[in-house]
Amino acid sequence: QKLLFHVNRDRQGRARFLDERERLVAEYELTEDERRAVLEADFHTLYQMGVHSLLLGPLAATLGLSFPEYLAILRGTKP
Image (cartoon, rainbow, N blue to C red; front, side):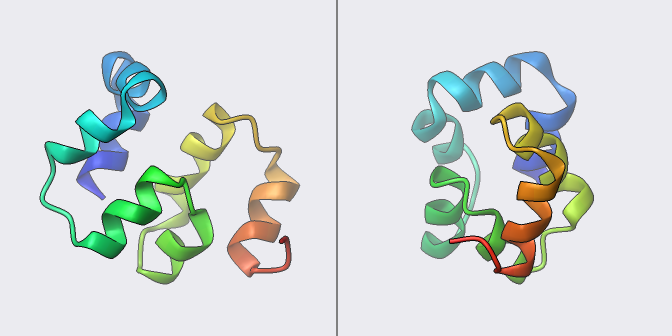
């Protein structure tokens, strides 16, 4: 969650997430499943892992998801 907090709150962190995601993620101690979910921006999995939706929402918007699309992903109703 710390990684997502930094990406949401810091312009440089957000830019690094968009441009060099693997290098950024490598700087954090994550499990393999967490790492994969962050690299793939798998919001449903991250939410199921316990990441709060208020941390996931801004990143989803940054990646171009609409709010209805984001909610559907969290609910697992969007393929």
